[in-house]
Length: 280
Image 1 (cartoon, rainbow, N blue to C red):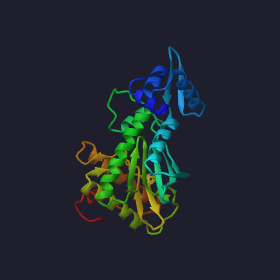
Image 2 (spheres, rainbow, N blue to C red):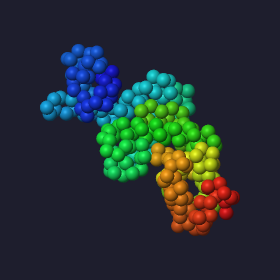
Image 3 (cartoon, rainbow, N blue to C red):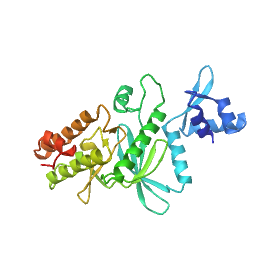
Image 4 (cartoon, rainbow, N blue to C red):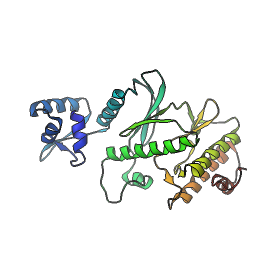
C-alpha cells in the first residue's frame, strides 16, 4: 500500500512527501511514518530529508511491487538461481504455482550512462527527465511487445508470458550464451539458423533487433538457438532500420569468422536476411 502510494506520486515528485503518501494510502500520519521507517530498514525505499522529508522507490522496492502483483495473479510461486546479470537487466529462474519453470527478467537501466541508454532506447524523448524506474518499465514494455510479435511468426525467442512494470515473465531460457563457447559443433549451421531468425523477424514481424551479438544468442542443449534481449528493437520502416540491420548482420557474421573460422560474406548475408535470396 505504501510502496504503491510512493510509485503513484513519483510521477510528480522525485521524493514523495510523507503527507502525500499518507493521503494516497489512507493511513494515519503515525502509521505511515512507521511503515516508511520499516521499508527504509528493509532497503526498499530511499529517504531524503532536506527542505522536506520525502521517499522514493529504489529497484528493490520496484521489484517488490512487480513480484507481488504477479504472485497475486497466480503466475509466480518461487525464485531460483540467477540465470544472468548484465549491464541493464537481471534474469532469474523461477517457478509457477503449477511447477513450471520460467525465466523472469528485471530491466535495470541506469547501470550504464544516461547518454548510452538514450542512444540505444529510442522511446526516450530528448530533454525529458524521467526516473530510471520508469525508463526500465518502458524498456520491459517494448521488449515484451517485440517478443510477442516475433514469437507469433516463428522467431526462436523465449515465449512471452506476462509483463508487470519493469519485469517480464517468459519461457525458460535453457542454454549458454554463444559468447561462452570456446568451440562449436557445426558452427556454420548455427550461423545460418541465427540469420534465418533475423530474416523472419525482419520479413514477417517487420522488426530489426538492433543490438545483435554473441551475448544475446543462447545455444540450447538441443543445438538450436534463442535470440534474446529485444528492448532496443526498431520497426523496419524506421529511418535507422537498414543501418541497424546491417550492423546486426556484420557483428554476428564477423564473430563467427573470428571465433569459429566460418567465412561468410556479410553483404551476401545481409541480402539474405532482407529476404532477397537464399543464404550462402
